[in-house]
Image (cartoon, rainbow, N blue to C red; front, side, top):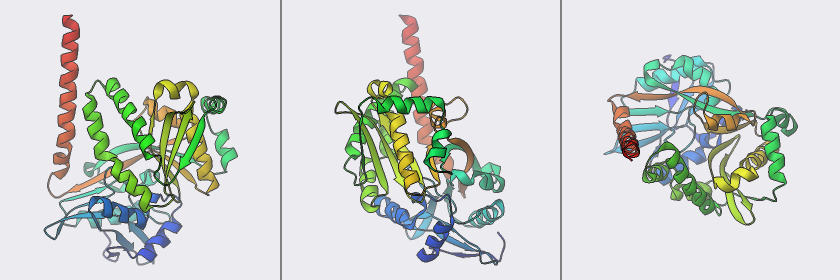
Length: 355
C-alpha cells in the first residue's frame, strides 16, 4: 500500500454514509446499520476501515472482527450468509483495490476474508493475488432506463412466464416486518428436500447447511433491525403458498433467498411473477441494480433462469488472506460432507446394481 494512504478504524459513520451516497452499486449489506446487525446477532465487533488518499479520495471497507481474549483473530467483509462486502465509494478501480489489499496483507490477523460486490469484480480481479483468490460468479439486472426498458431486455420466455402467471389468479403479498418469514421457511424446507434428492445427498445435510447460512432467528432480527430492508414476497395459489423470495432492499436491491413448492409453482410460473414485481418495486424506489446472487457457471440452470430477466454474469474474486492455513480448516467440514455424499451415492449405486 502507498505509505501516504491513511487508514481509520472503525470508519467514522458520517464519512461512511458519504461514501455510500457516492456509490451507484451499494447494497443494504454495505450500510453501517447492516454491520451493526451482524455484530448484534452473531457477536462480531465493528472493524470497518476508512481509506483516505492524498488526493482526498475516501473509500470504506465494511468489516467485522472476531475477538478472542482481547485479540482480533478473524475479520470478514462479510461473513457467509450476510451478503456482499468489499469497498464502498465512487469510481472504485484496481489501483485503490491494490492499496487496500496491500494494507490487509501487511496485518497480522489470522484470517481475513473479503467477498466484494460482484459489480466491482473487474477491479478486484486485477488487484487480488491469484493465490489468495477464488473465482465466483454472480448475476445482476441493470435497471438503467426504467421499468419499460428493463421489460424489453427480458427474454421471450420470461415475458411469457409473467403473462401466464398473471392469468393464474395468484395472490401475491409483500411484507417487510418479518411476518411472512415462517411461510418462506416452510417452502425452504420443501426445497431442501427436493435439492437433496437432486444431489443424491441425505436431507439432513441440506438442512444443516441451511441452518448454518440462513437460520430463522437471524432473518427475524434482520427484519426487526432494518425496517423496510427485508422484503418477503409470497405467491399463493388457491390459498396455498407456492413460492417465496427474500429481497434485501437498500440503495440497490439484492435477491438473496428463494424457495417454492415446485409441483404448484412450476405450472403457475409464480417465480417469474415474484421477480417481476420485485424488479418493479426496485425501479420505483430508484434502484439502479437488482442483484440476483451467486450462480454456477455455464450451463447452470439457476444462471439460465436469472438470465431470463436480462441479468448479466459478473465474475469476481473471493479473497482469503491467512497467516495460518485457516481457510483449509474452515473447508474441512464441507469436504467431509462431500465425502459422505459420495459414499452414500456409491452405496446406492452398488445396491441398485445388485438388484
